[in-house]
Image (tube, rainbow, N blue to C red):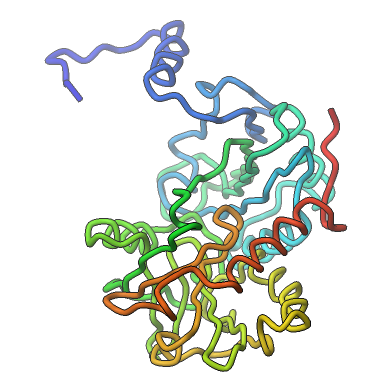
Length: 328
């Protein structure tokens, strides 16, 4: 960035033009944005803004969640709203309106986006009004909904598998780990460390030597005995995708792909000796991990359970009773 020796005081009439010019340099797939502070929806990315003095911006006092948009339907929104409301309570954030109204705002904003596939992310903040550590007196909570193209990952992650490393950064304390807050600094640093070291992602290990989670995804395993096993959710985020797959996975036992399903502490040594290791999440869905640090997982190739779980989830996202139609 070039800094001019003279800094202009920009006139109000020029601000919008400059915001539009900024987005022209940095195109984004942002299709619709609801702001309770504006009282409506905008579809121009240049107008998708949050005040700098919003407590979520300058103190990280906010929460978020993400749901998928698949073939014109919203997937698993109720589960995501459950987690959103629980995160709000733990963060001492007031809800902006009743749950049903938030649900309606999400659906209407999705409709305004005019797309059939993508992602829906929504935030709750304690509002603007000061730069103090605690929320401003009388601040109204801010509720924001973004309809966008979603996160994308390389095809090779699914065809060849990922490589992950044990991060050197400490796992979040349980209260912060189970709350989907906007402060993702440990997660960001772990992901950056992995990329700088030639890996695709990282894995947190807890103080007891058990597997935690990845940057913005859960991890799970197929043990040597064929059990599909997932870490307990008391010290990591309860991923909605993980919870749903734990419900769907028993179907693989009937097909002889696994011998059971368990949620428990997983010591690192047991995890490293597993047949398969997978990443699970709303955006990544199910992706196989073939190497952890210097060690291959299983035979070092994507396994059959990862592929079967992905098929189960894709089918559920298109034909289950967890879909909400988006009005045209």
